[in-house]
Image 1 (tube, rainbow, N blue to C red):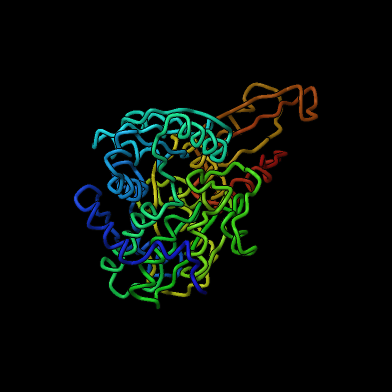
Image 2 (tube, one colour):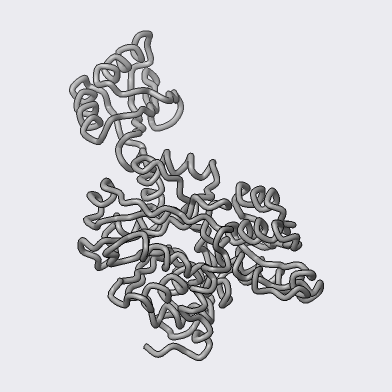
Length: 410
């Protein structure tokens, strides 16, 4: 496809210049090969670990490149942006290092870890609105009232060029690279990366991944222009963008080979796989690319592939819930509702059977009034850890053989 006149403002030369600009100030993140993930996905998988950046995400690349492009007058007025978290931290960190005041408008539901990190990096945080779009509107109002310099989180040539440096890096880090899979929110990351890669080696496939809850870029591609879609809550808050960018859409149209979506459970599962198998902490957006590979969502078949782990700023309470849900999904944490006689020794006999099958009890809850129990019975909800679904099946069979009425609690 032909690039629109707006998108011609971002070219390979801009990305190469951005690399020179940010060199020495942004970490050259590693891109190791993973034997485990290669086996699980059927690809030769490398992970570009942008979660290891100082601010925990790739966003500081574009933010810094934009800051370095400001005139003295623009910098002196201070900068403002709207962000769900990672762009906020990147902008706050690099602005503070250059004595530039950074004002950040974040949605009220932004994870606390991102709010506190932004403040700790020197950003002046304003919490406003239920989602990114409402925060963005407030940021524009403050920018007009106070004459700050606005730094868009994705739809800005300097920001896109800064993110595109990742594309230059992976081409050098992975000889024989055949594909790159990247998360997509507003399109700044994949727009810059795809431009860099395709302009140097058009044979490398570039694939974008969005959450199925907010497929704003997929809808924009289908309709030929950005569309504001309805808000939704997603575990991938870093790519929770309701409208694709005016600059980024033409880049995606021109350079990206495929755009797929993943479900919330897929993303949560990928977070757990990265944590358990790779000892890598990723937020929802950071795990989206791997989720697509694990679920076979792309047309890739054995290619040497880089999956971008774009960030690791996940709220610890959310991580705890994801781990617990993942254990349940994998059959390693199970809750059974079991009927037993309300008499001394009944619980002892039940726990003996559970112990014989090496299941570890983590919670017990008795109930004598609900679930239709007889007056001589009680119902007990037992939550326990297991090795795998096979162990669960063995335990269920043993309970049935011993005469216990039971059901799985979903």
